[in-house]
Image (cartoon, rainbow, N blue to C red; front, side, top):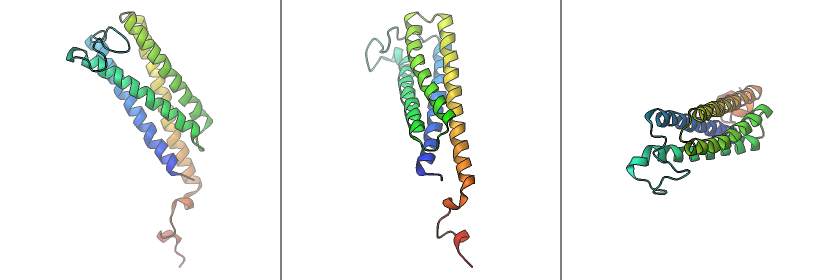
Length: 167
């Protein structure tokens, strides 16, 4: 039986994946444009929570990273709470959350080590593991909901629907 919670989980997980993709895109821009050290301190820029214009791109990247971390953790919590979540979906949601912790830690190290190429590459690699894990979670959520829908199509119709009227 497909519940409102299952539909919510579909929408939320896709939203999480979109936020993550946005973060990775912005991270690529930060890396390639050379603004990665515009905020040489971690986690805040030199002027604190509201940076000057020269720090704005890196500030947005860090803010989006914090937001992404939160939504990935919330996705994991919702998946773990879901009655219909597959065991593999739960495992990959935990892997994604662990990758977020690794990304935050590695991001701080990358800044402190002044963008050492090996660390930046490791940061990208872990980001790809995170992204792949979230893709797996999203696909499994949709697969599970589709499977539930096909197993019990009668539960999705309403008493007023024409298919339930006896002639």
